[in-house]
Length: 77
Image (cartoon, rainbow, N blue to C red; front, top):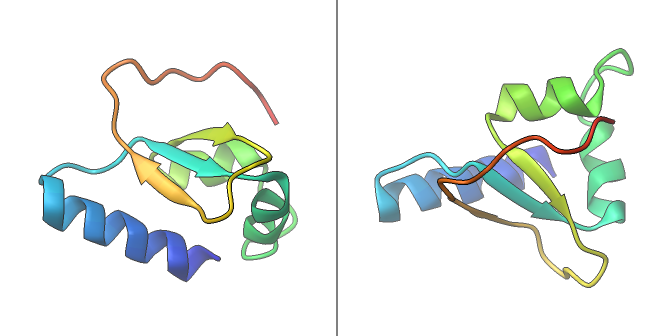
C-alpha cells in the first residue's frame, strides 16, 4: 500500500508540480497502510510523514490523492 501511495504522490507531483495534501482511502486501505509501519506509529504520525490529510470514504475502490488549499486536520487517530 505504501509503495502504491508513493507512486500516486510522484505521479501527482509530475502532473501538477505540487505535493498532494489529501489522501483518500477506505477503512480497509487505512488498516493496510498501518501494517507498513511499526506498531508504535499512530495514524497521525503516518500522515505527518506522508505530508497529507486523510479522507476516509467507504465507497472508494482505489486510493487517490488530491490537493486543496483548505486542508486541515479534523480527526485524530
